[in-house]
Amino acid sequence: MVTNSSMLPRSMTTWLSVHSAATLAGMGLSLLVGAAWPLALVGACSFLGGFLANQSSWIEAGKLGGPANAVTGFRLGLMLLAAALGSTLGDLALGLLLAFAAALDGLDGYLARRYDAASLFGEYLDKETDSFFVALGGLLLWQTHDIGLWILVPALLRPLYVFVRRQMNLGDKKEPKFKYGRVLAVVLMVAIPLAFVLPDPLRSWALALAVSLTALSFLKSFVWLFQQQLSS
Image (tube, rainbow, N blue to C red):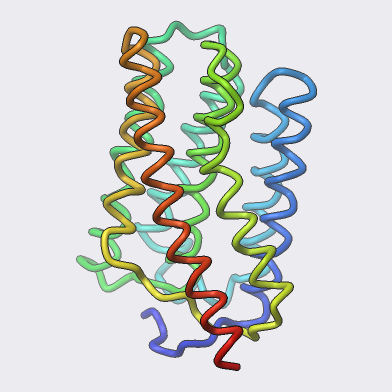
């Protein structure tokens, strides 16, 4: 079960920091080569490292990490496939592939509750997988539909949050869950697959709205960070 402690194990905080740096590096490489596969390759290695470094947490969810983590791993596989195929897929096929990965997002949480197979690593794996989805989806839209770099703003916010948190030396406090934060994340995860099939200007309007709402959601996270800093 997920611990009720407000503290994260050292292995978790270390992986989150390394993963945020790897994500930023992967995005930079992807922008240089004009494709999403470098981020996919770097991300796959980072997620594998997270599994190996936090085995004591994900094993507690059940054999091979439990059903919830298995679904999250399958979602990652779909994202990596989308990045590998990239522009070779048509808009409809690419949108459907990403939509399937997004639709499975709620299933892992349901399985964790249904089979009492929750874990602390699973909780953060889900968060980072969502962030990875946004990064890959944004890069694919930039690559295939000439969307401006502003589409990558939400993908940068999560690693930036982890980096700022690390610099503030807040220890291993577990971040709180903010009201409506999950709803706003879902809005972005729906908007990205839809953008592959929506015509302009609907595509740009939908993405701009989703990006703006996500940025507001992360603003609350940064406010929490600074509140912790002031109270420490």
